[in-house]
Length: 137
Image (cartoon, rainbow, N blue to C red; front, side):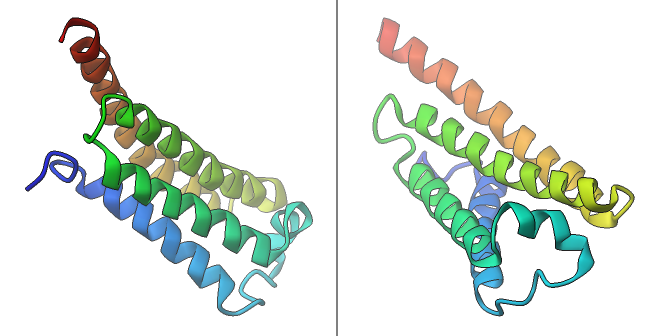
């Protein structure tokens, strides 16, 4: 298995799921029509959320695909992980602002952000290795 795919299963799942989530939001334009989405739909329309998640997920997939091909690619991957986690964090914040006890606040805020933080930790470690290899290699 090439270096760029090794030990990145959770991160690939995160990136591909983000594309899927964007696609899910794009299918029925009314999936965000309940009261739980009130503040989120004030910030962006449903189709804008769909685009945001889909394009972020696609960019994250591209950063994973090219990872390892150049010394700087772990930095691009880390950036996309941060952007991706910020999108989900913003989503969690929208639920928290509307009604903080909802399970969506926990799911988006803890479950997804926890996975994102683990991936970011691993990506930053790769950045350190890439920087050291470039600097001393």
